[in-house]
Length: 351
Image (tube, rainbow, N blue to C red; front, side, top):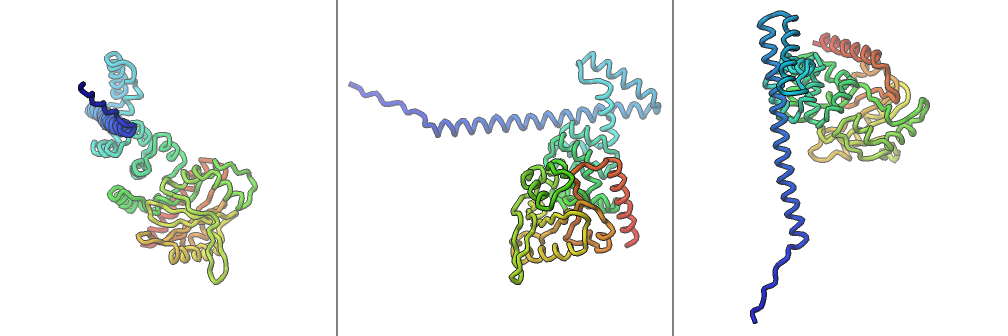
């Protein structure tokens, strides 16, 4: 009697491997399709805007422009359905005024969407717009995050914004070409810690505890590349113990970041304390390939004159004000614009 050869059954591991490979193929294909579709959508909107802009500029009549866009909207809606309203076409036209075709192609190469571009269109200043585009690209912001960063005046809170325009352009080009951030972009003049839930009266320890409980929220405000290392980091010098409130590492800057939390205004003594921390970290904790550590002193009251006289803006010690409740946006905007103007004047006087 002829023996029947037993049929080999697939093992669970083989099935799982096959499943993982097929999932990878599907996901990869979907990603490429989504990228292609996004690029076509962004370019289509820009080309439509460019064509309308070209026609309106040729006729050189603002009223004619409004009328032609409204008429075009009606015709497109009748032909292609909803989605081609007057406001949509206005966004298309605005994109043609604010972006070149190369800007659009660069944006889609870095996976920005039309929704991202629409948010960026709300910014008139070209340098500020470039800043948010690069930050969105590097930190992979979704449109909701981008809108929040714009609304919170992130650009105005960076040291970068206080530089002359030609230096801002050079730094943005450096960020674009090297794909890395600089300390002037990473560190800010003020931080909003309203989401950590502190009341009006609190101690430094309560502030530290609240930050640790809400560490994800704190890091989101500080920046995506911050990684938490330690709290109350003990360092011993001449048999005396000192404690660094918070110790972080910034992956992009490749530096340790020591953070000291203070109530009230900045005091000159804080500089010496932080300098001691940084020299210890530089000698004993800095690893091969890392840059020198940076210190950040967070105070809940601002006194920029002290900082100016100590010239801390030129050192590895950064000082910033934190808010546990959101400040009045108008007053904050005026304060930031004033600080930017003063900083640029001071830079001009140094030349």
